[in-house]
Image (tube, rainbow, N blue to C red; front, top):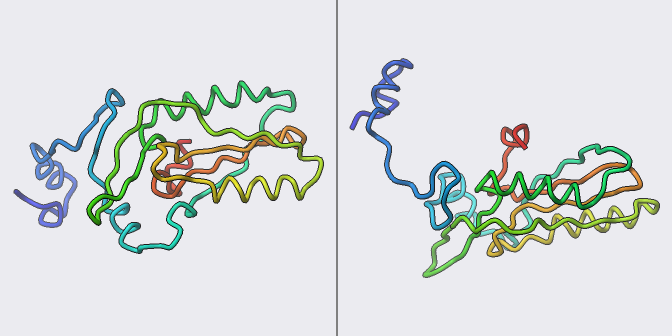
Length: 167
């Protein structure tokens, strides 16, 4: 089959892509189960980091002052339900890493009283260190109701700088 690099124009790349799709697992958000690692995921695991669970991106999001924790939880669960990457589970077997899309489940939302900055700082650190790659929950959040904000934390295996805009 023709490669994209052999076709330097958009029309040439489109022609090379025709019929080149292979079965890569669940499609269109309708299935759970195993899927191949992406190239960046293979690169990440090849680093053989001592703490691969502690490699994430985080962002504070302002929320209305009177937002209920239950509403934040429902919103995060809806996003995780719609985006399979936010439900990926990673396991290592026979020396190789594998991933699968886990069924939709609850989202890890922690609520803190932000009156004391050290409490929020400690909870934010715990959220960023607390991922278990095998749990199928590479997303968590921390609601700081006192400051009307939510810290959304996602493991870097499932989010990058571009996908933050989608989230």
